Image (tube, rainbow, N blue to C red; front, side, top):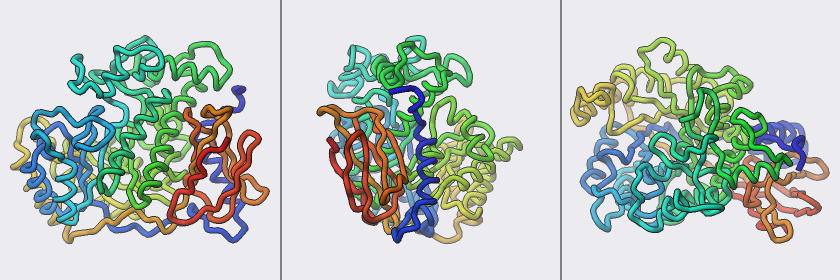
Amino acid sequence: MKTALIISFGAACLLGAAILTTSLAQNRTDASSFRNPAPGQLRGIWVDAFGPGLRSPQEIDQLVANVQTMRLNAIFAQVGRRGDCYCNNASMPRTQDPAVPAGFDPLAYLLEKAHGAGIQVHAWIITTSIHNDTKAPLDPNHVFNTHGLTKTGRDNWLMVRSDGITRAGNDFLLDPGHPDAAEYITKMYTSVVQNYAVDGIQFDRVRYPDQNIKPLEPSWGYNPVALERFRMATGRSDTPVATDSEWMTWRRDQVSNLVRRTYLEVKKIRPSVWVSAATITYGAGPANMLEFMKSRTYSEVLQDWAGWVKNGFLDLNIPMNYKRNHVPDQAKWFDQWNTFAKQVRGSKYVAVGTAIYLNSQEGSVAQAKLALETAGLDGWVAYSYRTTDENVNAGKAVVDEVRPQLTSKLNSSVFAQPASWSAAPVNHFSAISGRVLQNGVPADAVNVELFAGDRAIRRVKTDANGYFGFGIVPTGQLELRTLDLRKSLEVKLGEVTDVGEIK
């Protein structure tokens, strides 16, 4: 395939959305043309697996009681920490955390207790990080053991830096440009949705790492299998430098393809499940899409969350707007990122993620008020349950003493009354998924076009495993075209229309 044919995920989808807007003179429902009313007001808290909260029945009982007292309605629980699961029935092995009693299923127990109290549970999974120790995990089926440092060729799925380093800080990570790694990541999320009545799943660290050779230089993604895919897609034979624009676009698209595939697979299982992402907001906020494409988020860690939201592959965007309210520049950045997130959300939803661990209690209350009282924002999520203000984070105070103080301040000025947050709306949701095979082999990076009548309305590229998808599409009779093949389909509201394999 020639270089000129490579189109970034975000650019291609935004172009498709523009075409779609001008092409729907027919009588068909266009889910991108309006936004459902917010299904309540999201009030959530992130509960990580690095401290008390999820590890025993007693911790979970206390967690649910505390969340009720705080008048929150959603727990974002870190069930996938690093290639493992705080659960017994997922594609990832059960955690080897010694604080979890033998046989105990934290996720199942959390769901029972939280749902009994009217609180949602969103399964938060670290997307790429799989291990952070020089000692191998105990479980022989852990992905680090089966596809980590000791493996070679296609069996090695690890992220590699341009200088050959395979560890970002302390972490070993999976490369989303490796087809088998991408498939494994999607199954991490779908296995949880298949086996547990979670209200949502959440991507975290769905991007390339921070630990680059130089600032502003995206140095990761050099797994040999990923590199070879890039060469085949572009017709190049070199090893590109980190800032090569074509290489940056290709890597960014691998992350976007992963989000797209996982979103559609989850929605095929249960359309009402929220699919969210905790997204990056480094530095000052952009005023528009062009500025976003110059930001560290887009150009350094190669995360195009604006494209995901606008093109329907997230239901809920939660920017990690981790700014200190008492620092003037950061307070300004906080407002800028909130404004941009509203600007690009399309028909989807946006809640503000704030760092209560970086702020005083008063600062956190002020940010919560901004998040919940600003028109167009749908909620607030706090990080984190175990570090409730800057003094707890600095070791100067005890969380069990500070949490009631913060709760009192929030309830008296922000959460005067309880609020609900319902299942993800499906009455205007419609999407398409499928797979292209060529000579029995997954067709990588081929164009798939969506037609309404004789007019092309959307275009995407297949991922490494031949999968494609469209996130916000009109209902009714449409046609897919790819290679020399055509396939008719009828899109209905409230579901993913899966066309299966196109051969």
